[in-house]
Image 1: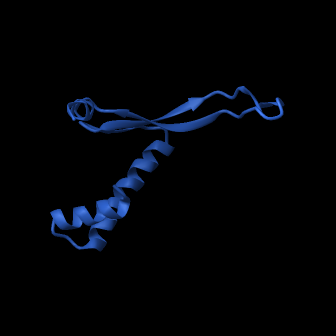
Image 2: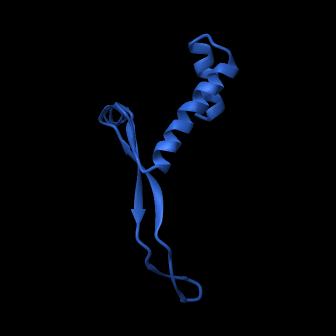
Length: 92
């Protein structure tokens, strides 16, 4: 499902205009992003949780040339599936 499909579905199911639905979806995503950027997690019961994981830098090797390079530490989003969603997926 794309963002525009989500907006359209919300608009139809709740009988609101596309503009209002887009503002709602935009605000939800903005709030989630702001929480992740500030180091907090996002938990949606029954669906899953998003957190930010920090990874240390390490020595990597270019497979073509064999040259070793040091990578920088990084942060990346991590999604953990909720119990209800996991069970529902296993049923299909």
